[in-house]
Amino acid sequence: METFWQDVKHGARVLLKSPGFSAVAILSLALGIGANTTIFTVVNAILLHPLPVKDISRLVEADTIDAKTKVGFANAAKLGMSFSNYQDYQPQNEGWPVSFQLP
Image 1: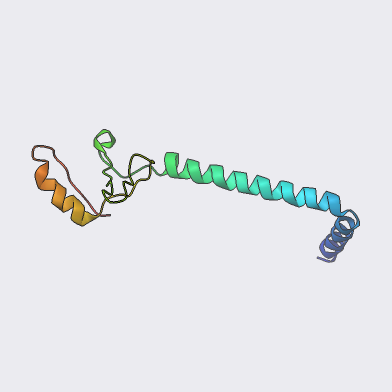
Image 2 (image 1 turned 180 degrees about the horizontal axis):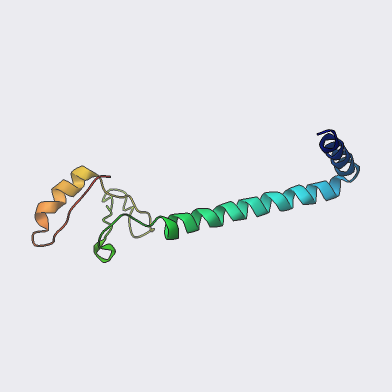
């Protein structure tokens, strides 16, 4: 354990002697760790844990367009849909099998 602390002290002295190298080394480590985390998060969400849906080809997304502010597809801002809005729209879609399940 004593040699470990000697190595840590020696490493700290070397890094303090050349602050430019230290900054580049820390920046490289930060960018590498950040990129690795981002890529793993995307792969984990898409490939390792897909959506728990039986028939993915029938999955749709319903969004709302605000008539007052005209927010919607014009500026590609999706507002989503509340469950109460879904209940209002469901009787209008007779013959279109829509089901809404909360997780």
